[in-house]
Length: 320
Image (tube, rainbow, N blue to C red; front, side):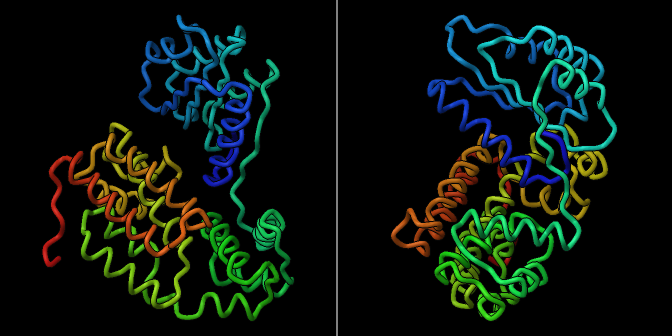
């Protein structure tokens, strides 16, 4: 997977995972971060399993691979294990291009995941999302939605999903305007921030306030998932340097600082559990749960509980 658009990268990895699991339901899965990854650990994961069966190994951020790790991966490309699916995720740029070329030379498929910035690209993304959701949208509504949401693909995708669900699939500019009216005061990201710092009372108050003002369930759920994932990515790397983290994770420094603040008091094991809760919540608010309001409240309580029971003694800010 090559490119700096995180949503497209994650979707591409998810598609490979689904295809592998369809063919090999008992697949053993490993996800590794290339930055600081010991070559010996990689060798252990790539070595043939004593118990047989298929394995899926995802190595993220390979643009940050040390020379020895890149050499080890290049060597593996020349003699791959037929019972192993290896996915390399490169965030874009020139670093370790030779590693990618070595894999493509051996026949590896490349999934391009570029950042979408132009209005035309963003409009095309919205139209594809609408089509995939079974809806229809007017050109004016596409422009209105991009203007209202911006260029964050996760938020655009979440907004499309909620629009199709709430308005029966026929989307025009008036529908987009009604959908976003009144949502500026409290956002899903406000709810997510209070949840991640362990403020149960504050997060539930903001949740009810947001729902009263019409913030879509799916936007709140997506903000919680984004916050948990980003906190986990920041925590998993052995550095607190904002510039280094921003470069490795391809995120703006302000988002790194916010994630660092939100991840205080968390353990990586707790964040992994919270990621699973967020994934279940995403399905719940898209139709699985009978009450999306209750699903959001239950997930918030569960995430705060996980932080309390598995965390590192972080404190909730005073005043709550």
